[in-house]
Image (cartoon, rainbow, N blue to C red; front, top):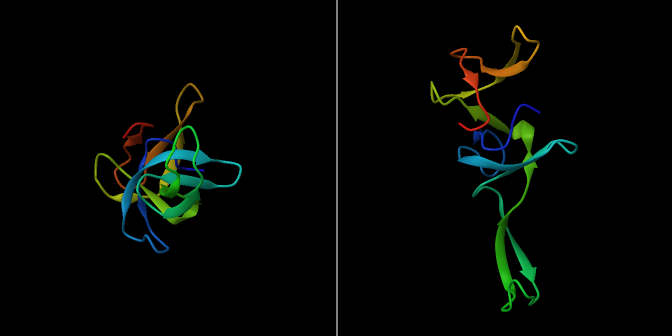
Length: 106
């Protein structure tokens, strides 16, 4: 998976196409991610200690990681991600447009 937590991503397909958000959590086994403010669902909850009122709560649902593109912080374009090996055999993510290294915290 080419997306990591704290990346800024652009949704490229689905109902939320064109929206941007920050990745809150990744689920590598299923290939899904949780993006802030995207794919909101309504969840009916019963009263509990955390929410004594209960009721209908809106929260984010996961989307497939293949439906997003990482936004490069340098060129501000949605880009595919390339992996490059450094001298010490460490793999880093690189923007395909400007060859800038993508850090975890954009």
